Length: 372
Image: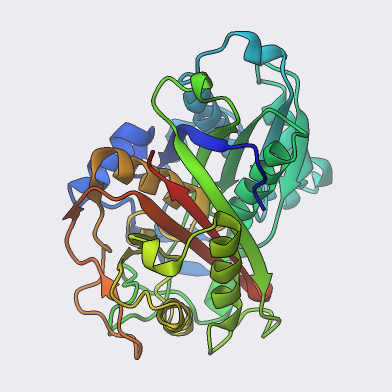
């Protein structure tokens, strides 16, 4: 939980098949473009996959994830005003579910370890830093953000750079296919005809600090965040939404806010039957059924350990531009518990946003941020 030290966040960046950098990515999304497409025989054993994947020609090494995660970090750092801050206490956090998993197939155990990827990225930073890997299924990004904010609030570090990254892989594709959780077409979060999710790959990064002057562009304020676990099933969410409800409840308490002060919700919204229903119930339990909500999976696919940071960065950009993106793929809301799902872009000045995520193992996360 956040303490008495104010925590600010900014310098957000996204590198994805939809765009190279936050400005291009947000502009493409705002104009109704998606990074998702049908891939023919992307991996052995998979004939067709609807997913978001980089063009392999974009990368020059055998570690694309290291390249696009590093590029995201560099973009974030370019938006900072470095003075004395380079010599202060820094934390670097990588959020990922599988790290550089492609090397596992070649027997390169060390290189496939997420900690190795974190160290390689850390070497390129212009400051000394503590290093941390957060791997907590699909809430990894928000869990990393909460961890970094708590370290700053506790006066253990001054600044933190966090990056979330995952690559599309044979392992994850076959895994989700075995659950019958993939949609053969574009995913449809919260839609009545939703059939499953699409996978994707991306990196997103942002900086947290107790010092507002570090940022070239006015930062947003971190209000509070929390995680929970519903202990329901290794791959199935709670049918009641209790775990997510508790995460949001704790985040509100740590933020000293009430649910009626939330003006927008950036949901997890995978496009699976159970997840979207569970989220809808959890939000309604907090009286948020009429609060505008979106899911961004229709633009990026599910990018696993990067997803909640990708979506946080895009939501921060929405708060800056006063444009909140529609839920790509959703034509008619179709959960039993009704939600105010955006089916068109919303032009509106919004001050307080709730961002949530849920993942395998019953984990849930919630964070509130404020536009100052």
